[in-house]
Amino acid sequence: MGRFLGRVFIFLLLVALGVAAYLRVTYGDGKPYEFDPGRALLPITALQSVVTYDEPIGNVAVAADGRIFFTVHPESHPTGNKLLVAIGPEIRPFPDAAQQSLFDTVLGVRIDDQNRLWTIDSGNHGLGKARLIAFDIATGKIVHDHVFGSDIAQLGSFLQDMAIAPDGKTIYIADVSFFRRNPAIVVYDVASGSARRVLEGNSSVFPQNWLIRNPVRVMRFFGGLLELKCGVDGITLDPSGEWLVYAAMNHDTLFRIRTSDLRDPKLDNADLAARLQSMGPKPLSDGLSRDSRGNIYITDVEHSAVLRKTTDGRLETVIKDSRIRWADSLSFGPAGYLYLADSAIPDVMLQSKAHIDGSRPYHIFRFKPGVEGEPGQ
Image (cartoon, rainbow, N blue to C red):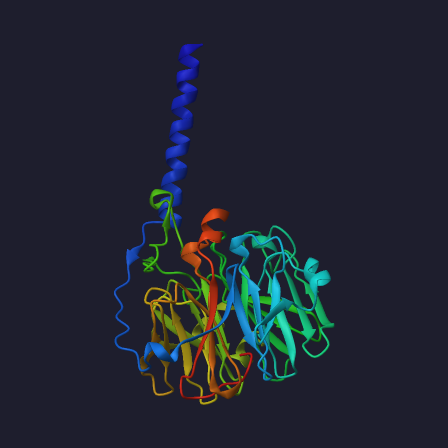
């Protein structure tokens, strides 16, 4: 019996070592990314905190009338309200407390040119129902509701940010696919309710082997077995809607592709890969936005900063401030302000409830980059 138990122990040990080696190779062993954002164009006094909240902020979308819609980050495992609106100093659930049951792990929010607030819910990494809901922001009524099938929202997927065509007919959704490691862009046709996964696993949407070194915390866990390595995350459109611009979080390059190509069902992934265009280097990033001139704004999760890729290809740091723990979602609002959701991921991801509560408050900031954009985008 003793010899048998010894063999079982050795077998289990070998299995554990094999699993650990697999996890380290697949999810760990990242290298430092050497990137210097340089000096910021704006002073830190330009950054204003406009929303403070006791739970971690997810994403933000600001309406033309100044209302600030935001989600509570699902990685904090909220049990109360998950979608809220700030109107001046007042913060309340949107549309109301009763409808919070619509949401499971809602994160992404965008406002389109038709004054609809779109929300994307990953369904807890594909374990539940990934869902896209649009609300009329004037009435709070649901005007569109779609549940994705498992062919689109795969087990281990994470549908979490989106860009909406100016005509409101097509939505482009980023699937980070942290656990499944099969990132893609989902092209959703609003009228038909049909969706396709495109560029699935392409190197432009796949994370490179970079380790995120945030000032609060190096994003490495369990002795290096797991690191935060995310696929395509930030996603936005140019003002005309002709180009989709996107970036994987752990990637050194910003990309774009024509939306007409993405909407063409005759083009397969190889065809689309041949039509990709590099827009040059970027920091390790989360959210993206753009202004009315077509400049692209890129968050920098390692340096508490927001950068701008100009239309002539220059990369410049607009603002940098140590108050920003994790520069996440971006949204232009009225009067030329660009709003920044600080999701404070290092104080949220794989942290205890006590730690999350002890790290409050959480913030939405804003600043004026000097060029206006479309509210909600």
